[in-house]
Amino acid sequence: MAQISQGAEDDAAQTAQSAAEAFREAGDKEQELRMLQFTANLHHKTGRSAEAAIAAEEMLKKAQNTNSKVAALETVFSAYMQKKEYTKAKDAAKKLCNLLQQAKNRQKEGLAKLLMCQAYSKSEDFSQSASIAREAQALLHDAKDIAGEAKALRTIAKIHFFAQEFEFAERAAYKARELVRDAGDPQAEGDAALLLGTIRMQMLQSLDDRTSNEGFTSHFFELLDAAKEAKWIGKTYGNAKLVGCSLMLMAQAYTMVNELADALRFTEEAAKLFREAEDDRNLARLLLIEAEAWFAGGEQPKAQQSCKQALRIFQDLKDAAGEDKAFDVMERINPPTPPPEIVWEVEDAKIPESKMKAAPRAEPEPDENEQKLGAAFKKKTLGKLNMNKVDPDLLRLTLYNVVQEVVGFEMDFLEDDLPLMQAGIASRQAVTLRAALEDELKGIAFPATVVFDFPTISSIQEYIMDTI
Image (cartoon, rainbow, N blue to C red; front, side):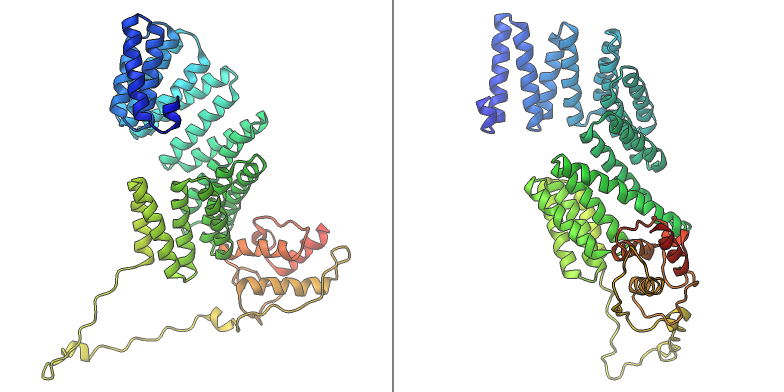
């Protein structure tokens, strides 16, 4: 153990192998098995998957009782998963399930089936993997293992997620969260909430032009609700990684709706947590989100810097998929330079007649709505609203202030009954409007679909007066 604590895992593995041979010569099979498992685990830890598989197979040959066979098969499975020999990993998991079925241990059989799911998922056989995960859920439900059943549901959610079946994934993740919430397991609840938020982010990114503004806004706030819940659980129970991942998800969401100041604030907070935890992989992912936010705000040099930092980390980690993602972002923020125009430098050369006769480009007609918009809006100084005794006229002026501030322009045409969508509040501004209203009118909660439920200033005012 002293060797392990000093980081000399290779020497420790060699020592354990020698100890296994000594116990074999002494006829102590129990200690020999323990040393073989120790050897396999150490090789697995240091990434020596071939050596780990050899030790694990040797352990399996010598296992005699059910417990030792179970331990041996679990070790064999881990070794072949690390070697990416998924067919052999499946075989080990199947033998493990059969062994536990014969022992009539439904709880452990269910957990073994979850191991089998991993191998099928890695082989991209998502249909079979989902089927096995449901069998695992049923076994764990019968065994009254709430934590195990929730794990099975999270596994089902991940399988559907990788198969891009997002509605099925969301349903399973939601059930997992409710299950662990009822069981009072905050750690598992935080993990389930983060998974639910991640799935909803993918659903949000997959929306197309056919999605209504109301649909986009609803998806956005459902995503935020899950991310904020995970963040709160992480803070309450001291899980810094959960807090960091939740902040990363929130930063990505706010970047999508161009709330860049908030997005960058979240990336800064998350980066500090990931650096303290030495979580380089998540830090690199976060830096790519930060690069997207800087680029959306017109800060290309800062975007390039964040992207290069992420690329270096992925390269150090030998994460090929991460490198590809970093290169994709780099290409997006540094589009290829167009070829230079032809310059006719030779004095006697003639410019082709087709170029001489090229028609001048017509100037686009100014957009009708752009003609209506005035100068950049400057927030008007108004009296402070007394929420215990609201002045309707002051409330109306406050709402005019908020709407124009969100749009960003003076709007002479704005009226009490003008639909806000016509005033320039599109789906992404709807997200900002809700936050601005709640910031201005403390103590009043507005629904995520405020623009659709209360589409005019007068209807928002009526809602406020009815609420207070």
